[in-house]
Amino acid sequence: MITKGSYNRILLINPPGKVYVLPDGTPAHRKHCTPPLGLAYLAANLLQNGYEVYVMDILAEGYKNEIFKNQSIMYGLSTEDILVRIEKIKPDIIGISVLFSFLIEEVYELCKSIKEHFPDIPIVLGGQHPSGAPEDVMKCDHVDFVIVAEADQSIVLFLESLNGRLSRSEVPNLYYRENGNIKNTRSGHAPIIKGNGWNYYNLSKANIPYKIDNLPFPAWDLFRLHDYWNSDVRIGGGDVIRKKHLVMITTRGCPYACYFCTSPLMSGYRGYRMRKNEEVIREIEWLVSKYGVEEIAFLDDNFFVSKPRVKKLLKLIAKEFPNVLFHVPGGTEVNALDHEMIDLLAEANFFKVLIAIEAADQSVQNSLIDKKVKVDRVPETIEYLKKKGIETRALFMIGFPGETRQQIQKTVDLAKSLDVDDFYISIVTPLPGTPVYDECLQKGLFVDGFDVNKHRYSAAQIKLPDTTPEELEQIRRDVWQEVFNEKRKKMQSIARDRLRQFTDVREYERAGFTSLSNIPESVSQKDRK
Image (cartoon, rainbow, N blue to C red; front, side):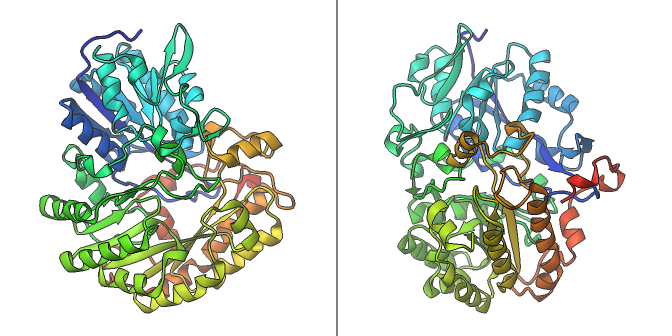
């Protein structure tokens, strides 16, 4: 039972990494090691409000520690190391971020281990998965609370309530137990869209930061930055460009609401908010002067929404930071990339863009993708990006509900035909808290054996009219491998000097792994991709 008392020391945890391994010993996706920007913001806000904050990034701090379990490589600190750290820190409360649904079972196991050794420490979960399935998460006996959506403000109010300075009803976006029943503090607000166990709220009712310039800069001092800098894999894929890199945002939320995306859960329905360009420049100056940062990735949900804002920002960046490299690993909106924008990107040392095309079939674009990409503009846009020396990647999605083999092939043909340096074909994943998940649930479109807690982004999970899950997975893998080596050899970019360059598909896929050669083949041939 959680009682009111002194809750001043909080430990924030980033969970371990997990990569599914195919029967032939090939990882289903790359290992990663990205600085957790959300936790860094939470930590900064808690520090600003007088709380004592510690951070444990299980993934980064134990990046080279791998174990093979349930046909997956888990990497990160061992449970024993985690428990020793908790004993040393002696936190009053523990917060765990869960961005990915495929990690939730590992997080439950972690919570169980913590509770077995520290039963009186409350555990609160947040992030995309708990925000999409808060009541399901609260069914885990080892989880005491869930905070949904952006939690910069609500986590502070939550601690205030634990310390008896606020009532629980004054804490926004909170799920908790009362007399064995799951309760929440959102019930008094009318959602703009009501889903199956989740809701979309207008920005005014979402109870998230509205003026994001008022937030303190992320508390990177609490993180072991060398763990990220020594990683072989960087956010957005591709080569290791500069050693000292970090991440930041210029906006939060997105003005669109694509039906497969979790952004409205975290940031409100079309809850787009911009920072002032001057504040963005100030943060870049801080990262460069304090940490010696040489490369910055902007993690905005949609960096290019306001073209006038972005163009002014790029001019400032080009003027102030001629020796720093930049990129936007999230999907770039094709409709925003006119020639002037591309010219300014090149001048500001944006060495790479990832164009979010998603689907080649215009009917799929119009009905399912809120951005409504103008597919006919794509080839000319890519040609001009390449002309300016900007490494160009493209993002596609296949396996939308109702998508035919012909429509899938149209996307595959476009991906292969474009003169990009690399492309990613992902399989549509029905994440909890999204309309696509609810549609699959209502229409019985989930594949046999589907488990929301065992998502794999490389696996087909939606029944299609004329393509089997095995066929869809094989298409995704074969097409990418077929063209990787050829495209990488032709790549030209502003960033010509690189710490590590990948030109071989096998090396690219296996970067950072230490134990792949020791994994037994234990899955039948029918499960191959």
